[in-house]
Amino acid sequence: MKQIVVLTGAGMSAESGIKTFRDADGLWEGHDVMQVASPQGFATNPELVLDFYNQRRRQLLTVEPNSAHLVLAKLERSYKVTIITQNIDDLHERAGSTDIIHLHGELLKARSIYDEFDVQPWTNDLNLGDLCERGYQLRPHIVWFGEAVPMIEKAMSICEKADILLIIGTSMQVYPAASLMHYVKAKTPIFYIDPKPALGSDHQITVIAKKATEGIHEVIDLMKV
Image (cartoon, rainbow, N blue to C red; front, side, top):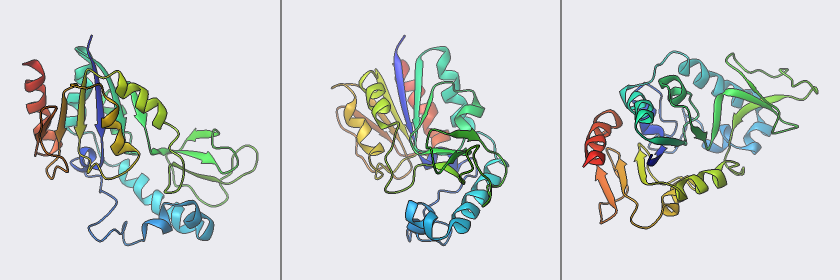
């Protein structure tokens, strides 16, 4: 069974109503990114950071997977599929995909500031005073700017095994995630779906300049050829 590896970014979930955090001016919901997505920002104003992610979490619980999420889940009937996502939502899981690597963490989880491996499910607001069993403050289970990406090596090894690589809804500007396409074997077909693609088509890459829910069906047809 062929191994399909799928890299997904914010454009994958945008059609479900999940806002892409960063606006054209670089601000996230009116905040400088370092205020709400860095260890320094959390140390300076933890209440602001917790509120920022509480708002994101509340919104996530009101949306549903879109048709592109569902198509990827159905691919598991015919292929071995691993999804490597930059998204912190759980829409791939809710759509039915079973093998998912979250590079940047998960919004519906919290972890101890004392032990990064002390992670627990979290669907409510996360506030100052919410503590782990050892008595340390909990923080969002998110990889912030300046922090290591613990799942990147596993993602690299998965890409090395890919027979087909799909890239959906990502600007290919955020590293190290953007480097993953370079770990697939030479001549591995790459299909890139994005309405504003950052890459051009060549002998290996097929670019489909469409939204995820439109482009995914075109890619499925091309894979059958």
